[in-house]
Image (cartoon, rainbow, N blue to C red; front, side):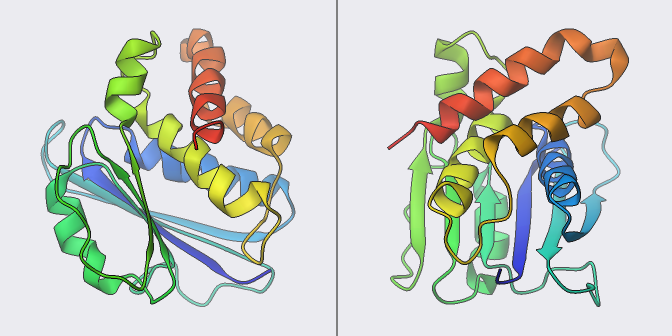
Length: 185
């Protein structure tokens, strides 16, 4: 598999760190080398938050992703901050419920997913992040392309590891949100 270097970015409270952690765990369960590096501002909610996730067949030299081949942006400031760093031919997944701007680069594969609206409509409030993870899974792993690293079953196992025991009731909702994202066109 080709190295997968992902940046998840948004505001604090949107679950970008959790989304990255879930994908990192999926890579770990799949037997890959992984790193997960969170970064966030001093604010508890509403500040900036992003994380770098590296998934590879080889040892990872640095956990910091400076040239992602995948960007998941959950707000406009995050899109503007990271879009120019995405490598040519990369994949960008945007929560179009919150970001109205269109990507001008023509060398990227861009998916506009109204994740926040879909989460609300489907009784999954607060799980737009997992809808975007599901879409990422569909685009990266479902086709078994050069970036594929796990199955949906592996992703579900990763969610079991990431959802803490005191939030066990959220496990099925997270799975439902990821499955919804994976079914999107």
